[in-house]
Amino acid sequence: MQLPRCGASSAAVTIVASQITFLVLFYSNPSGFSLKRAAVDDDRSWSGGIGVHIANLSRDFNYGLVRSYPGSAVSQIDAFPAYPDDPLVRQYSAEYWILGDLEAGSDASFARRVLDPDQADVVFVPFFAALSAEAQLRNGKGHFRHRKDNEDYERQKAVMEIVTSSSRWQRSGGRDHVFVLTDPMAMYHFRAEIANSILLVVDFGGWYMEDAKSSRNLSSPQPIYHTQVSLIKDVIVPYTHLLPTLALSQDNAVRTTLLYFKGARYRHRTGLVRDQLWSVLDGEPGVLLEEGFPNRTGQVQAVQGMRNSHFCLHPAGDTPSSCRLFDAVASLCIPVIVSDSIELPFEGMLDYTQFAIFVSVHDALLPKWLVRHLSSLSSKVRNQMRHNLASVQHHFEYENGFPGGRGAAIKDGAVNMIWRKVRSKLPGVREAIARDRRRPSNAQLPPARCQCI
Ligand SMILES: *[C@@H]1O[C@H](CO)[C@@H](O)[C@H](O)[C@H]1NC(C)=O
Ligand SMILES: *[C@@H]1O[C@H](CO)[C@@H](O)[C@H](O)[C@H]1NC(C)=O
Ligand SMILES: *[C@@H]1O[C@H](CO)[C@@H](O)[C@H](O)[C@H]1NC(C)=O
Image (tube, rainbow, N blue to C red; front, side, top):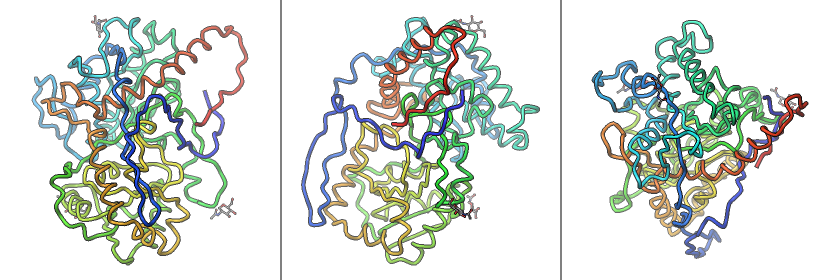
């Protein structure tokens, strides 16, 4: 199942222009930077929705896991307990909101729950894989990469046994099954087995084989390998934002800081870029860098920092790797994304250039370049971008306001956006299944090709 190298990571996304109506509001400003309103699909692409069958897993694999999560204060009889509050875990909660929406079976949701698997477009695997991984990392980190004494591994194995024994899986090779893997460590032991499935991931970082090696040496031409993931079949989903949403009408504070960044200076994966960027920006006028840890103290600091700043730095390197980007959106702080290859949620449906600034790693590391660039954007442009941010905030929102998360996802919110994206993958998935099925059993396959788009 190994895919050959795929060159640099694939950030470019095909835009299905016919499905998108841009509300265009062009204007220019002295710096030549023109903006239109952040794009939102028209209503036509909503019709029909997507038929989703929920694989028959016991509650032990989802809500039961929430109850047994270390430190959980949830009652044993609560059928729909709240997802853990711990920010390190909560950022991965997409799995919880997606299942809560399906369980509610609301007519207002894009995903229609279908009881007969043969009538469904896709099969959703209701395994809280992020929570399972995080529980193991808390209870027995040393065993995480091993199979022995690893409850997460046992759960993954049990899920795979149930799911792969269905006739639907056997017909499709799992291609029409949907797994939520927001945590890069989720389903760690069964990646090869689910490689063909539709994976909902925050980025492809957890799937890079060579990332650690190549990121240590920025000038190395060594490509990053995409082994089992592709924008053709997988869907990039947002982290859950952790900071409260600031509405435009409440945005009264004067933003005094030009550029804000809070986070760990050193990171394992994209450490070098971040560290260099820190050195370049430290002490620059209007720049506020804060070392921080995502606990309560850190959150209070981050709310202040993001709400008092025009721009929020997102030094991604190769992966988003944090919920910071979505916290910036919630705080109406214009994201400055330093990355040459980042994958972002809902591209083709949203136009990020209308509410975020993209900067190459090369430019960002030039002394004084970034501050000069950001300072050149007029207050008119900044205001327009902040308005645009306000208009896309809800697309990244998972919280549906229902106790236990069981209720219809908000219209145009993250869950419905995700299912729309999944639906857009279906023609390609069906084509792949048809090709698999007509292949003679003794066919000699060439290595699978990763078609980067
Ligand atoms: C789901 O699986 C359980 C066993 O775990 C079984 O008792 C039940 O009948 C199954 N339900 C359906 C609808 O297949
Ligand atoms: C980084 O990669 C370049 C190009 O392959 C090589 O010349 C250089 O020696 C490498 N540096 C380190 C520190 O490995
Ligand atoms: C948050 O983490 C920092 C750094 O580890 C620590 O100094 C601080 O006391 C922590 N705050 C809370 C509320 O745990």
